[in-house]
Image 1 (cartoon, rainbow over the protein chains, first blue to last red):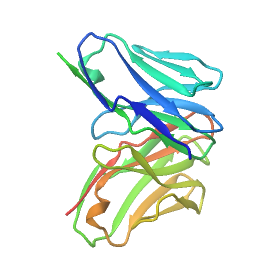
Image 2: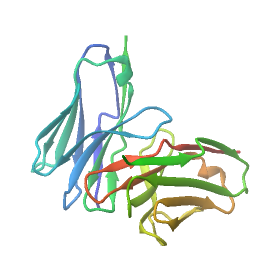
Image 3: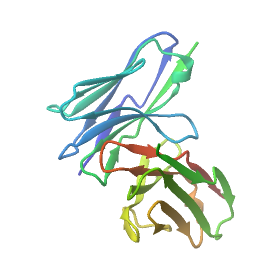
Amino acid sequence: KNQVEQSPQSLIILEGKNCTLQCNYTVSPFSNLRWYKQDTGRGPVSLTIMTFSENTKSNGRYTATLDADTKQSSLHITASQLSDSASYICVVSANDYKLSFGAGTTVTVRA
Amino acid sequence: SQTIHQWPATLVQPVGSPLSLECTVEGTSNPNLYWYRQAAGRGLQLLFYSVGIGQISSEVPQNLSASRPQDRQFILSSKKLLLSDSGFYLCAWTDGGLGAFFGQGTRLTVV
């Protein structure tokens, strides 16, 4: 069964600090991995998309890494801002039709 | 550019009443379309997906149904709502490649 597990479930960080979110998956065959940011009551918005051959991808203060051998990905947030408070969802695609979702990590940034 | 429209944004319905949520996509053709539900504090659960007009696959048996009357229109329905149908419903589409985009969601409260 294709699964995506994210950790931690939630975390609280101070404004200006860095944090790293983890995503482990068992989806096979692997096609691509996406990180989304979801504000409360809104739809998820794409942050990064990585295919098998990509190890790292950045989008502003967000940097995602992918290790396709160990089936692990991380999302690093640099110099966090209050607006980074949201849920971050890891989504792995095995084919064109089905997306496997992690449960998300809720990040709270405090001043 | 591609856009996805989902409405209504919020809905309060009595138990036993019907439901119709609509999702339309612009700027692309023959998209793969999805309906997800997100319960409070939980991850996204795939309800239905469609790879073409009239083609609907159900992931979880429940009180809901989906239809795709046109290429870029996806409708989520229920004949009689249950309290357990309350949640946040998201429509999404993929283009078979790397693109995967979500609507803004519908907050459904069944009272």
